[in-house]
Amino acid sequence: MLSNAVLRVARPSGLWRRAPSAPLRAFSNAPARRHPVPATYKHPEMEDPQLNGYPRLPYVSRQYLPPKGWEDPQMRRNFGDTLHEQEEILSMWGPDISVVPPETALRQFSLAVLVFVGIGAICYALVPDSPVLPRQYPFDGLKEELGGL
Figure 1: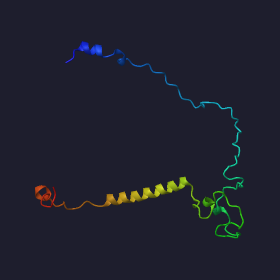
Figure 2: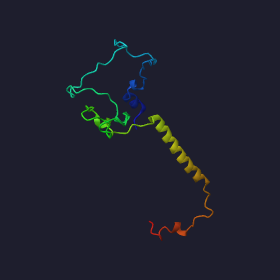
Figure 3: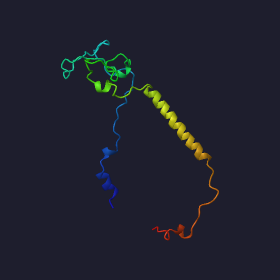
Figure 4: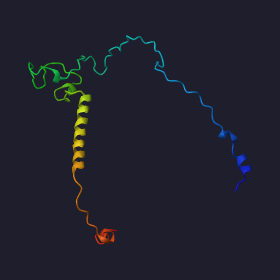
């Protein structure tokens, strides 16, 4: 065993001192930096170099357009019309536009799940216990006789 004197020499005394800690800065709602950008700044409409002069068409789904008055009523467009650069998304074959906002859909789905789980819990609580006990076998439930290990 080592004596206490040897341990005192081997242990540096600086390890047991508490390190000074910097005071915590109070948080505030003020912005961290002030930028010299005016409040009315708008990002300039940059031309996409990949479009190479292709016209910028409004991002409107064909599902919002009226159903009648088109040369191609299924796609709701006239022959010779300029296609949007994202025609696959905006066409009639694109994803359907939801009638219900996502927040309302989530609320309705949560309510349906809650009702389903609630009915299941009520059915589970109302089922009476079995009036008989399960059969009990000797020798640890005939474990070895029934092929158990």
